[in-house]
Length: 454
Image (cartoon, rainbow, N blue to C red; front, side):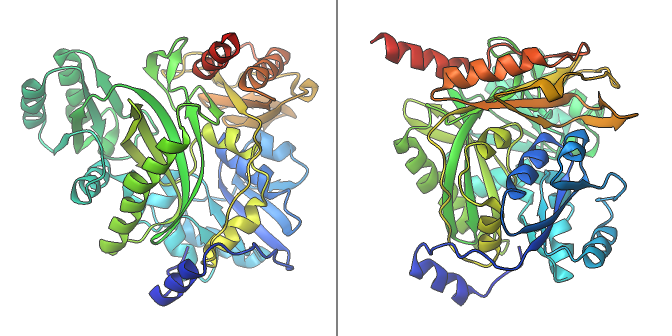
């Protein structure tokens, strides 16, 4: 999101929130990514009256089936020059970079240098997600509440620290590991094995060359989002996802088996604390480090006794949280992002109706999973929106290609109704090679029923 002069940023901040002026010119848009997050972002941007041709690369079967989108599976998005050449050829005015990997690899830097407006942080700022060691050091330096930790490049030193601290304890790859490089070890032996897997056996490749070992935090997790432009921070809304593969939040961690928004645990008081103690200090700290952050910041929180601590920062919308957020968003997403890129402050409006997303995954996920399974009856779904993730088209048929395959998303007057509508849609879909959790939203539903019983 190209840097702006400091004076311009101060002027925008001093002026306070501005009315969002809709751009008259139609904008050709490219969304980079292939997951459910990118399907949801493209779906929402396509609703803008100023959205011209909307391209998605590489996209998935869901984006191919959307009449408002052009899917480009052949565009190699890891080749920045190829993306730039495509944007110039097609007159693309705006690029939304969805996943973390291209952000860490500097796609926004390359696009900005080519004069193409792109939403997302630079590679230097994306270190907040690309390097957990970097993120934790920012927390330490700028007094951001988080778990106590140390970083290691030597497995023997990491194990000695684990022995000193005891279990339970958390071992993380410092680098990107597709949401799977976090082990919550309940015993010392599990923690030692995690170190060996990451640093000796290279289970996560170069991502595990450095590990972060940190204290175990108990409480309830939630996800909180904000638009950041240097030191200017605009709170969005929160969500809660379900990382564990099994019912009752048991089993291995995944990239997310479902989500819902809003998250009742994120009270207005906790949201204010998160902004004041976690988000603003991060934004100011990144500016002080010479790596100002611009884009959407995703703060993973652990909440206990009315206080939030930072588990991690991500530098993009969450997945599947994004799917739950986009169906609640009432503002023009494309215009809001363009305004953010212009340095204008925006305020997004959200529906009060809760939303809930159920992920249909391939059997075996998050371990080895089957691919190529046919998915039927998608056209029969009513009362919900199906966002695709790991899918493709084969001979006119939607088939699975990834671990997380579909995100079935519904809204309701309360979270229970949203849950019922989402699962009714899940039951409509025929995907013999898939499975889902059947308790997504259980915490929020339990709170609702407790309130109704009073």
